[in-house]
Picture 1: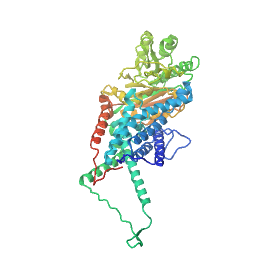
Picture 2: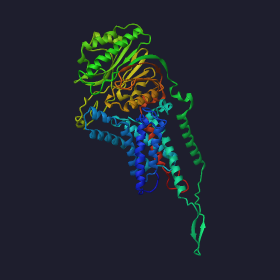
Picture 3: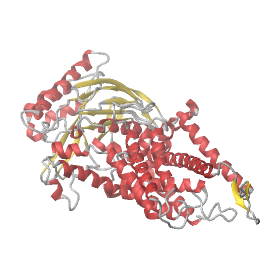
Picture 4: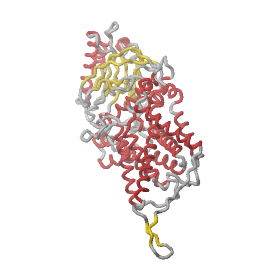
Length: 603
């Protein structure tokens, strides 16, 4: 973005900016959830996000781009930054492929790097376009960078089924919390990109000022006059006239005012501002829940006699205890939630010996103290296709299921957004999945949207595994305030990724969904993080990871719609595509905006 003619930079500068981009990318990954408990810099907390670190690390990329002299050089730096960032965000895919899939370590590591490198191409193209069409005005450059970066994020999140894990906006779940119910995670990323550009520009100015000072002579320079005598004359200062038009002054003042307001909105703004996005939402009453965490090792989960036996004994026992507590205790649960595939076999494979002892206590409940059960399980057949699903049993539904075991009338949710290579095999990649010893298959997709489950005065909307990563798909259920969910429930099993930072990252993703929609989010997982999150994105209760237990919690359901829920339910992410695309095209067509006094380039 120097606007200089193409040239050849020094090898030292290239080496320096290689490390700047590499460290910046790793910092971007660490900003979503700090991964190292042994070394924690001041201001950071293990497993927690850092919006400041996300902005600083992205500013390092902008700094490298501001010193790039060729489009190809800028694209290389953008690709390197994004590859380090993405590989650092989802490196734990290595665990699933190597530890549980049996893939050789070198091949599993290569697969993670290949995925990160492929997704990084979106960002390389974005910064390449930016540097090829960079405007002269610094404010226009900031907007163009934010728009291009956000378009790359949107492309990664939606094209080819999308994989937006680690998007920069998730690091802002605390710092930019008031913006979440207004603009969503990608809008927060747009704001962070603007602030990163401003920070990088300040650093660039400081570097230039320091270099200019270092180049000044420390004493007058001897000059030989016409008579051959050396005399000391002070160097003549080169003065460059600046013509500040009223328009330039007004534009600069407006730009700095916007930056100041953005900073204030992140650092404070008052309680009224922080609740602005949820003013149209209201409480619908408390919901008492038990969230179950079985902690069944992934290498045993689908093995008869070990993991399958543990699941079929422990989860039903916890459900029966919850049903008994509901009638015996005033604070007993109204809802009991077991995680994804807590029942690891098809219903037909289990038979009446399993289902009758489970359903009879549910069906026998009467009165207002009844409890319902929501559990994950596989459904379907070879002929109709299999689904990753949930079943919800109320007392009435349990009685119907006992009366007609062949066609139980229960609430059913089928997973819509399937995991590539896990729940469906992309074209031309079956050879890759055949190399791994993992139970993979082609599952059928559920509809979008699916009606919420009405129970205990709440409308409960389940989502499975990484479906809570796609806010625009959850938003499809918020078309009307009357039919919108009041409680969100995520059922997950990420034991595939061991005791890794994936657990913490997924928790931050759920927190941001709660903020966007102004809804509590309940999380029932196999190994963690099993948690209750309120409508403000605050984790109110949390089970320790990798421990078997249950979380007894109470959340308040919410009705009404946030601004994000309203526009995302109607148009999805299209408004962001249109706004960012329009900004990119308009600024590129006005690339000479800001030309002054014969200047031909600007960093």
